[in-house]
Image 1: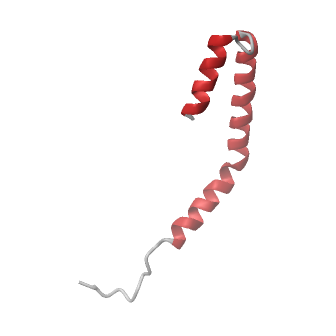
Image 2: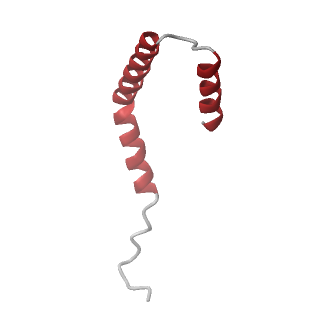
Image 3: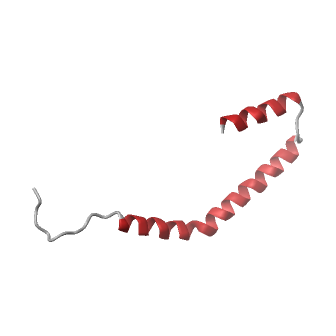
Length: 67
């Protein structure tokens, strides 16, 4: 991530690749795509997390204390 930030900073110092308006438009498109993707797969992630939590539960055992 740091590498990408440094490259972007260098590109902005040398010569801007896009105008402020174009950058804002790209940011809106990326944000909308990210939000849309998260909304569409939210239930899948919830199901995956629930299955994972159930799989990690310790066995109930016979109810007797092990101490």
